[in-house]
Amino acid sequence: MSRIRFLCFCLALVVSNLWAQAQMPVYAIGVSGLSCPFCAYGIEKTLHRVDGVESVEVNLRDGVVLVTMAADAVLDEATARKAVKDAGFTLNSFSQIPAEPLP
Amino acid sequence: MTAERAFWSAYINTQDTVTQGRLTPKVVMFFCAAVLPGAAQTAPVTFNTALPVAAGEFLLREQFLYKSVSDDPSPLDRDIDVLGAVSVLGYGVTGDLTLFGALPFFNKNLDLTLPGNDRVSRDAIGFGDARLFARYTLLQRDMPGRSFRIAPFAGMELPTGDDEDKDSLGMLPRNFQSGSGSWDPFFGVVSSYQTLDYQIDVQAGYQINTREKGFEFGDALQLDASFQYRLWPRDLGTGVPGFLYGGLEINYLHQEMNQLADSNDRDSGGETWFLSPTVQYVTRRWVLEAVVQIPVRQDLNGMAVEEDFTVRAGFRITF
Image (cartoon, rainbow over all chains, first blue to last red; front, side, top):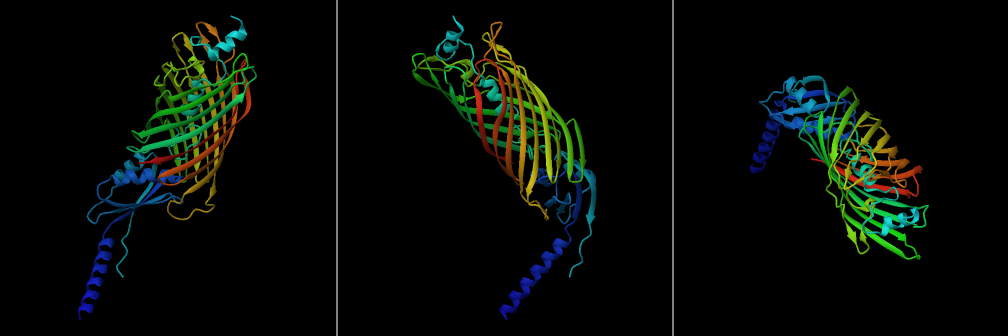
């Protein structure tokens, strides 16, 4: 019986975690001028300074940076543009990725 | 004093400040430190780049070098070895404006033959002249996966190195001191075109050397070009993979003759062309790099000593 309770607890934990992640808005930022690995760290650093940013993931080949925000936070385009400019690059696109539905 | 005596005395006389040979501190400093602070991004190994340093970001570049100068047309048979390290710190004030500071450390050894065939050795060890300068991105054209930039720079070389070093033979020659003793402004412009596959950088720099204690090193002009190509990985995956670059750099250095009082030192100054194969491994946070600088053409004045080669290796980190 205790084993079943433990499995239920784990399942609830996983589901709540997935739910929380699904609520975290993700933004795709297109960056022009991004063309070497060393560039990536600068843009990660300036974006991490923005309030509410949870994680930053750079895809160098496509020139796209994925920014995951805290569940209750919003990233606006002007803020993203300034962070990219502070890193020495140019923002060329900005969009929020729709949250995936829970399985 | 005959020309020959003056020539000898430059290396053994305690007071004579005539400089012989081309390996002046100015040349070493200008070539090792002034154009070196390319701490930003995937910079050439021997000079700077126009690529940005993010606002609030620090970059540290440490480069170790060994230089051999021994092709001496004079009976002095001078043989000069230089071991050095150049530390460069860069700070991004904004995405366009970066401040740099560079401090070299040299351990120089000079072997020469005195009249009577006595072979002597002289050493100079210490910090050289520090350099402070700013670089501003004047033109920036960013496209997906590529960037073109033009950035002028200007700064000052400070007399932080010892220019009155002595040994058992007396005062070291001016050209062998760790520092110049003078405040010397410099300026130039660097341009970069970078893509995901390759990078091209070109730079022009000029240093105005000023007079100190009746002596003035000749002004120096340096022109540089660099081509780097991504050797690995051949195909880019997702994320931020490390890049291995192979490259080739060309450096042209012209230095005017040094001046003592109001007369030129005819055994100083001249022109040198270097051809330098490079290798760099670049990641998000650090870079490893190495280069061999081969002087392919040296047109030096008078009895100047010609350089054999220079090897540099070092790293860069960002924080």
